[in-house]
Image 1 (cartoon, one colour):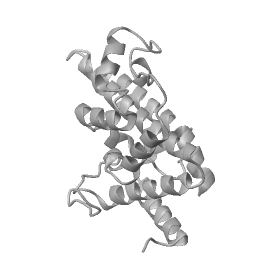
Image 2 (cartoon, rainbow, N blue to C red):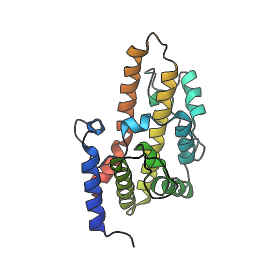
Image 3 (cartoon, one colour):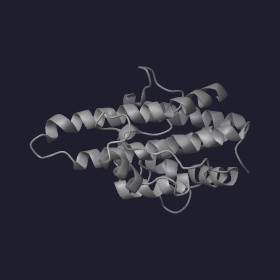
Length: 216
């Protein structure tokens, strides 16, 4: 039997309270979001190949690491030299509702969101022994909040899918940028690349954060 709405709300509040301690980097515009939908450090630690798989899944194969790298090589994008904006690509055509529903199910029933919190998948709902309770609860709370918000309209499903697809674009772009840094300039350029990725990740989730905030 699924938990009652009041119990769900309590779980969301408890999970956020526990996870937000020590995770101040999740703040948007100098203030903490109502609920963390990802963890910056954990997201950027996702290997490029794994992020590529998630991106392909969420976009139905319309975007991938290969596309992002190609765009970076050809100098398309915003021209800032780093960050997802310099390599992301827009789908050739908007996905249909069935594709969105499939991608949304991957978010709420699969391990896509788990990965952005550093949760190791065990192939079920149980927490891996290598995953912290805080991360596990935060990922679960994010899924619940997104599911609750999406009850009212399918447009929120699309927004959630686009937000996490953008997240993986940023992660892939971050790794591609790191690959171009030489040993001598690593210390100087690494922080700049990291700061750009942090900014792009937070900006990617602003619209979804606003929707979640209005629904809690």
